[in-house]
Length: 112
Image (cartoon, rainbow, N blue to C red; front, top):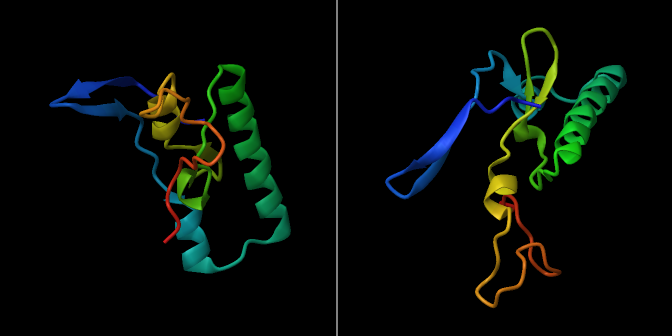
């Protein structure tokens, strides 16, 4: 899981600061080199699951896991990034007062 150094609000916009990760996202890696060897895919999934388990232990659900949000460090490690939706949904409700996690609501990146 990628650390968050600081967060806040400026001019009505929420922001958070994270460390720079030299490397690429899993999406970029797949586009550049094609399908992963099975052992590498299993390692990446296991490391991402470990990061998500840590987030869940802290009461945070990511809600937008996709290859673009998995960063591959230069040492080969996998980091889970972009917890922006998870933070934005904490205690948020719809216009009717229902939680944003209700049935029929799909947070995350829209399919293109």
